[in-house]
Length: 336
Image (tube, rainbow, N blue to C red; front, top):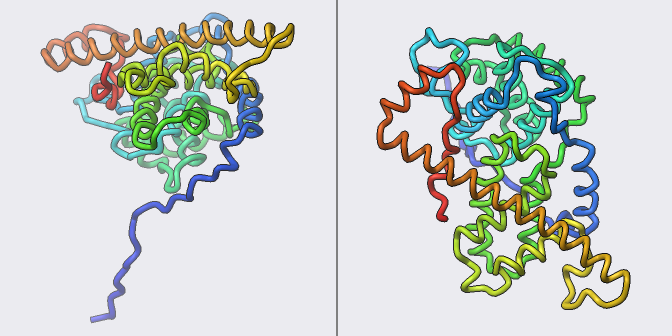
């Protein structure tokens, strides 16, 4: 018998240690400036797309996030559980980046509804290459579509996507801001881990809803952090995490205001103008946080209805040509 080799390599992905230099104010200012260059159009459903509706976007977004219980574009096939981000244990930043690609492409190019799932799979394919140590393969993504698309179609669409986006693929997403916010908050590491997990779930949830396209990524990230702190009731144990103080602090951080890290903002016309701008950002932040909580409550209510009567929920989906999406997996674990 030929000699057999024993492979002792571990499948654990090695991660770099956190670098404090990547969390300083200079990097944050660069990210706040860069987020404006990679923002999709807020009106592409009216101005660009003729067949694609917001409800269709939500369906494909949910498929990208937690999987397709069946291929909604090939209803004659039997339902086959397919889960993309969840089953493949994708990095948290893959899905928000893929949705950024999707919205930017839809802002530029009309797409037929029969090609929307192909576009979503392609966005996942490219985002996985950008963020994953071991990216998703074209063959695996085709399996998740119940083989409704072929690998060669996916590879051709990849070229169309990256050229339409002018190879500007390192987009800034809400996920990128969460660590910056947490690093500036005087909170113990244990609480930061819990806030981070909940905020990442809110970011993923916001990416499935078209209403949040109009909000910059930094605003969605700040609103997610506030919603996470409020849901966990951490303000009672730490006065810094009280609602008004936290929203004011994050409003200054979003503007990268040096006054965010001092006790007083000073006096005079300059300080008054700074205070006015901060108050405006603070109002927008509170509105965004309220939208996130409303979306969460709606998603939880829908998930509870499906759990109580899954057969009725399945029949309702069959009757509707376009239905609402399921709840992102981790949302059910969020305390509010």
